[in-house]
Length: 197
Length: 148
Image (cartoon, rainbow over all chains, first blue to last red; front, side):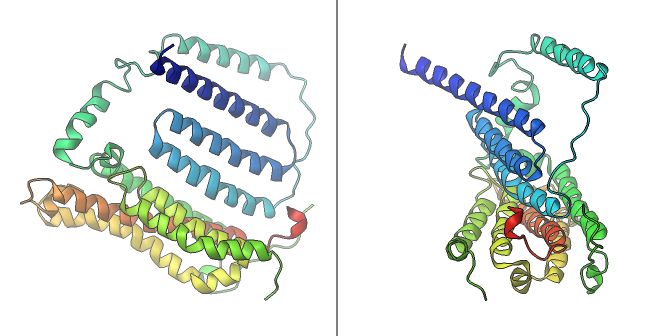
């Protein structure tokens, strides 16, 4: 085995172990009823996906996943958790078999669909041909910035990003209106009556 | 001031400035490496969130009051939209950055435009993230030790 083959094999091993850990974390999250543990596990899940994105050479996505998914949303979930109970109520496991049948059907349909997908990294895959190829060809001539992701995000798709920024602004506005009524006009923060279980 | 969580307090005091510096690096280096306004905004907010988690929300609100965040949220978004309006006033399309420096032979206008809108994105994202955190954290006095 030469160096290139070794690199491919070790990369595949890394991908497989990261994906296995993702599935494991997801199952532990499903089984756990302790909200604090679930929040922490969701942070770990984001960090693992960020590592997986790095392994796929999608560093910009990995960066966002690590900063937003593992960082800020974990803290926000912790903050939200403080406003509610610490443990999820245990629910009676339903005896209905319809759920498992639907999940099995959809799951096998999805797995069946992956057979038609082009192999990973194929140059003919739709993700790498057509518009992606056009961006790679034209960014150097038209935008002249080295990072193609930034060129697509801020210039080619600048209008989309304007909308995204507005979505984030609207999300903040919504949280302010829901949780911070009164404080927006300089009043005191609203405190609920203690109705927690 | 109590001295509970002394180690965490010392660590966040050392880490605070490097985190802000890293956010600025990610912000203004987005054309060259991974990163940009979204990531930089989040990292910038994280520095203040860490400060609030360790020092208490009231201390952080003295550094960065809610009123300032409200203004930054709006200014950040308007900065982006304003760049689009500016390119239109200069005779180009909305967000057609080449209008910012039409004489340039190496698309300097694109560089200016990307820097400007990313700055707007960073400002809007960091203030919005902090605002959401303030709203959630402001309803409970502080995280009690038994909650962990």
